[in-house]
Amino acid sequence: MSTWTLIRRNLGRNRARTVLTTLAVAFSIFLVCAVITLPSVRTSILERTMNARRLVVHHKFGLGYDNLPVAYAQRVRNLPHVTAVTHLTWFGGIYSEAKDFFPNYAVDSETIEEGLSEYQFDPVVLDQFKKIRNSALVGVRTMEKFGWKIGDEVTLRNSVWFNLSLMFKIIGEVPNVNPMSATLFLFPRQYFEEALRPYEQFNAGGWISMLMVMVDKPENLKTVITTIDEQFRNSSHPTLTATQYEFTANYLSSFDGIIQVVMLVGFLVVASIVLIAANTAAMSVRERIGEVAVLKTIGFRRRTIFSLLLSEALLIAVLGGLLGVIPAYVVLNAGKSSWSPFLGPLTLFLMPVSVMIQGIFIALFVGILAGVIPSRGAARLNVATALRQIA
Amino acid sequence: MITLQQVSRVYRRGADEVHALEQINLAIPDGTFVALMGPSGSGKSTLLSLIAGLDQPSSGNVAINGQMLSGLSEDQLAAWRAAHVGFVFQFYNLIPVLSAAENVEVPLLLTRLSKAARRQHVETALQIVGLADRQHHRPNQLSGGEQQRVAIARAVVVDPDLLVADEPTGDLDAKNADDILDLLRRLKNEFHKTIVMVTHDPRAERYVDQTFHLDKGVLVKKEE
Ligand SMILES: Nc1ncnc2c1ncn2[C@@H]1O[C@H](COP(=O)(O)OP(=O)(O)O)[C@@H](O)[C@H]1O
Ligand SMILES: [Mg+2]
Image: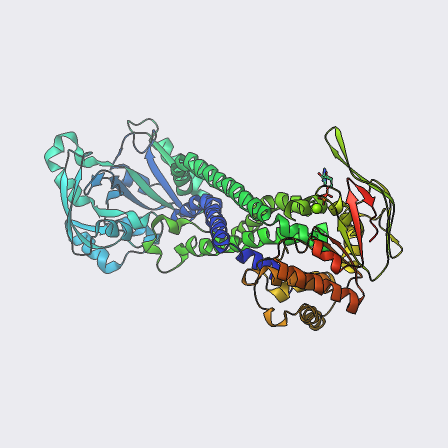
């Protein structure tokens, strides 16, 4: 037998309590890892959607404020340093219920390949996309969400464009190149314009939501931004041009408040686990005060008793920490794995190894906070008084 | 030799002072088995704590085999107890999650003995108390008498000079009480232990060499 045996047996004394406390720590550490990693979701969305040479152009007062004339595409294409331009038009279609939101756009099938080059569309599929009037390309996540498959015909209703209802034939997937792409629904603008022909007197088919502009070199981005916005400044539809990075960052900043609230909740959870663990540690020490008195009587010193009892708390904490950190690492890095399409937004987390280490340290800290006071109390026990209570 | 000179112990309870022991003078030669008797609250446990180095007197001196206990720090006292004193309690106080043998081994965790040497010590101690065949049992699988014998094995495993016992038969029936008293006497006879035992048990007088009577913190010597 060794001191270690004593610690182990004491942990086995109330197995349910030990297991539950360990799991509570594990669960909270898992949560803490997710919370610490949360800001990385932003970064990874940014990094994955960003193209260093791309500019996004929309109405000066915002994407939702007004559209831009379709003719802008050609005018921007003619500017120096611009190598490709394509445009997207927000359709706002819904499939079943309004809450089942997914981004669907009418796109220019002729320019989409060069305008969104990182998507690397399959040439065969792209060819069909150009030929089939009502074709649609759909991201995997949206396909799964509605149980669609290639070959299906689906109808989207919309309330933005004269309450049009359009029927589409899904001919392929949008390549899954970034977090946005998995949700996209793209269809040829031609079909959209045809459907709007009855409303020609409103020039209904003459609008786009935004331009995607490729610039020859990153160092020319600034010049091109100024040129574009200058060009349309005094028109009826002035523009705001930004790098794709700024555009996405700006869009994501609307989630900052939520992220902060989630982080706060996460840390409150840890705080409450500390309190629960402290109570458990205090209880398990109190139950054994008689034994502690005997050990002290026999000649165990304060320090020995203290380390014996604290080790129990630390062991539970570290074990719980490992049980929290390892699954967290696996789940929060699932984006890198092959089953990522099935995990939804979890794939956006990118938990670095350093967060594992932080998690273990937080667990240790929980153990120390919970264990120190009761262990110290027991170690300082006055033997003669304690024996009087037990003997 | 245990010697107490002018030993008093005063407890403070708020504004009150409780004189648990007053001016005790006492000498117990090595290798004797003595009983401390007296009514409840007369100071028996207090006296035992002072002899065993669990508590310090308010005034006076306690010396065990020439070692003055007063003036030792808490840790020094702990080390002294670990090497020189074995303890037996009324309610055995074994650790429930350890087997009999492991309970006996606990005091050896404070020594530098090898694993093999420790096992040897444990075996010997369990043999002395007649429980060699029960070494793998947990306390709750043992009778009260057996648990007390394990506790005695734990007390003697470091081979201390002094054994102190506070009402060791208080929770046992007559048969088991006799066995325990007999065992203690054997420890004195065969292993030359000095044993100080607090007891209410009138039977004890047949086993001990000398009885000290306490009353209200004062020693009252009765000649027999
Ligand atoms: N820690 C303490 N604080 C205050 N009073 C105490 C303390 N320990 C013992 N006493 C008092 O000292 C007296 C002697 O107690 P004790 O030695 O336990 O007697 P006994 O063991 O003979 O029953 C009692 O009056 C008891 O209440
Ligand atoms: Mg008493």
